[in-house]
Image (tube, rainbow, N blue to C red):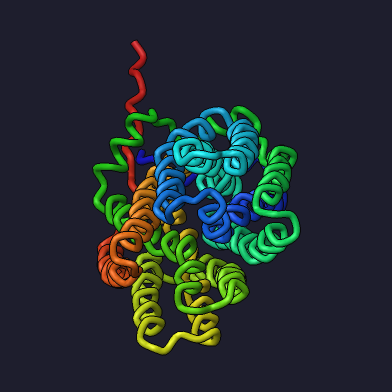
Length: 410
């Protein structure tokens, strides 16, 4: 008899998983969302180019992507708690290293490698694996929307806090304070500690077989293509928009407010995407999000820039910011089941981070070369249209695996 890939017996209460998971994502995503605020003070104080800073953030994103499948694999095999605890320690170490680095190489090692690995173990892929195993399939998209909305609230909350810390204590001390704050992930992770047998229950499949199955499935590859675009767009905007606005004569407060608005409206966007994912085809939701991003960027570049236009753009982009996360991960769980959800979520997120690397690095590289961000804005528009088309052929039906033959009694 065929085995349905979505069967899994919950072992933790949904409320506990959502509260602890949401708090962890709030901290992890909230801290990283404000990194663009450090671009100007660090490059000015150290005498570095924008490309030096952008390259370190680009390495951070690619390190996050490369480490993501392995962090997810470990979480699926040994439980999320251990991965989250190690990720929290790496986060603190990376932030301290970011503050103390005096060379581009050291800055890339701490801000890039350490923080990238830390984020792979403290964000969506690991948390969503626990959600997938402990929330019923009919509520899974909604629950992922709740967790994503929490991460969005963290962005809204942490950007003004980080801006205040930089102004009141200086950029180095602000990073030390955030390093201490990141350690709060450890006690929160206790709430996501599953019984050992929970990570091994359900349909049995080897890790290698799961990877081979996913990479051979066209819909998985289309999801990866779309997620590449997501990473390119949001990380370019999140890191470079403060400097772009400064170049256009806007005050730092406008950039801070814009990033905060992105986080605020992201709360509504991610929650809405999670709710809609229970009722509509998720591929249609994803296509609409990517197309709407391109339209929003075109409108932003077409109108005269002003604080009002910046705030409108930030609000619209915020609504679309991480709204791709719940439907993308829900499709992965729907197709392949939840046994290796953290690993497969990390794998599809790897594509997101390759896009993030390209977006943030090209932003710095092309600015230093041409003195303008225009080319990268145009690339973001074209890629959004591509992603809208790429998600249309995604099939959301579960893979049906033949059950292994039972030995015949002699």
